[in-house]
Image (cartoon, rainbow over all chains, first blue to last red):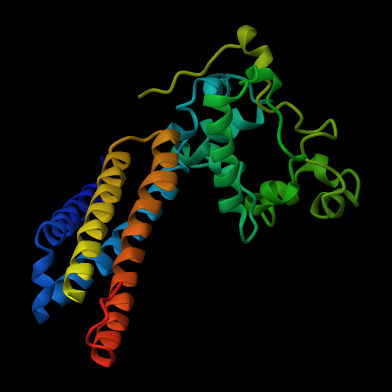
Length: 210
Length: 77
């Protein structure tokens, strides 16, 4: 557990003690000092604790470990280790083009104003389906909407390797069409091998050194 | 008399806040989507309800004192 979480748990524990103290000794509020203590213990500190807790939970929910903690995501996690350069997620993950600890979230959040919150809301829906719905087979899991080039260009736009790549320059309109999301990076016979979890049984896997 | 009402509400407020924060602490010990959902759907509403009850008790207490001063024989609700 990281230090921030430990500090937060410690702070929350103090607030819990204060809240229960106020609950057990409500008559303390008859004095001025008790009133101030009640305001701090039942309003200011709990609000702070919840705000900090929400930040910690949201940050934690962006980790690869969190995403792969559901059984149905196992194959998608495996696809990050495929030893084949044509697998887009694998090559990003293995070459640190996305932070390994936040690999899923880096590509699967919308880089828009409420993209993070939309992703979280979808995640809550996924939990509902996991426990109360019919869980699809990994190969049947599809994106809600076609993958937007914006998510790729968030990192690749302006990069020399992207702008000077020979296959991007074959047609002078390519980069403009990609930028306008009219030519998909992933479904135009270009980078179209993504997770492809239904072919994993035949794949070989990269083993990291540690 | 108004004191009894505010104290009863503060007791409940403390219980709600404490319970919500205990759930929050437990969810921080576990990295899993269920922990996130428990925090969002159980922990946050409990703490929120506790805070709101406390604030309501303050507002209602002030109102009750005002009423008791104006009509000394009326029992505050």
